Length: 416
Ligand code: ADP
Image 1 (cartoon, rainbow, N blue to C red):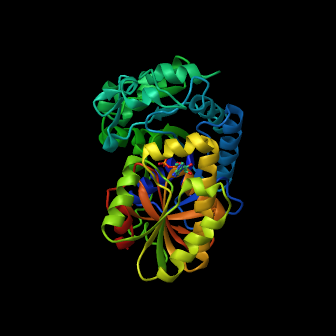
Image 2 (image 1 turned 60 degrees about the vertical axis):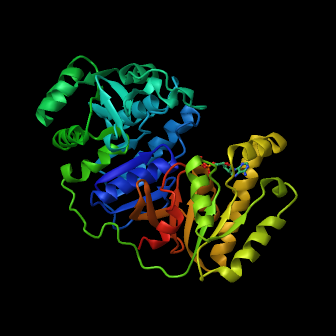
Image 3 (image 1 turned 90 degrees about the horizontal axis):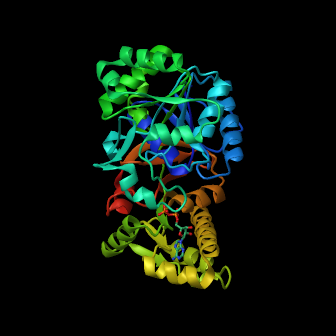
């Protein structure tokens, strides 16, 4: 293994793994810290749930993950954060980064959430979402991690305890890797051993990747954009078959628990195209487990003939009504529990190719199916690859709410 990655949430881990595979690396993503060594992988991405966890827990889990990755031979540690730098003034990005830097004895740590292909760029230390400053984007209203300051040097500074942070400016990045190394040395000389790196396009990330390789910096803090530049810079052999997965045959199913606009459109399009679909009425779930069995019995005779869809996906006003009746937490929990039991039931009936829509829904299904590691395969849509579940041979795709084109569900089963 060349690269050890720690992602602060599940779908962020998949996004990173997908970009590494597209750049030619063989990648395994694990859910939490693995208990056994991972074979035949250039990179391992450990998915944690540390973005909004209490700081101490986030730090502890990240340190344990880094120790495991180092023990497996990782030369560099890539701490993957959200491309909108989602965090609160208390952390967790800064405090986790600081703890990892201490563990790895890092003289200098480059930091950039940039993902230019998705419109996330950094200039003069300020993060842009498309043409808007981060603080003008919808992220300023995020329920858990509102981002009201676009100046990442300030944001990171407020999260650090013992280390100081400066800026590697665009002027240096433009001149190339040598100038970036020089700028970093100057920061270190001033006692600033972390640096927000201006990265306005993929070429900037190529330059940063080259500097990381040349300096041997053991730790980087980045969004998934850097993953496209890193494998080549680290001299990783490009595996033409990096995304090849073991063949799979068997019935196809979709479980959908996301209520995002994109998923609502995908469910509607699947049904409009004649797809077989079973709705889960969230209000009925409070009455007991009957609906789970009903859904499995409905699906069983159809399996293998065409993909089936079981969905709790609903319009915002329906979800609000359900949440008002049951409470938000109970509604979410009951739906996740029901959908994950249905996933287990369908797999027991012969489903071998499974799409799950929704980040939390994916987490619940993967757990219920006993999946601990996923080999990353071909991309269906940006950020959503097919994966091979090493535990049971299942082909599974985990779609975060807003990802995927409207025809995603049919497209997935047409993607070999
Ligand atoms: P996304 O990736 O779109 O955020 P998630 O799966 O992470 O999707 O979150 C969706 C949440 O909404 C889950 O907790 C799910 O159980 C819940 N949910 C799904 N359908 C309904 C519904 N009809 N009523 C209330 N809650 C629902």
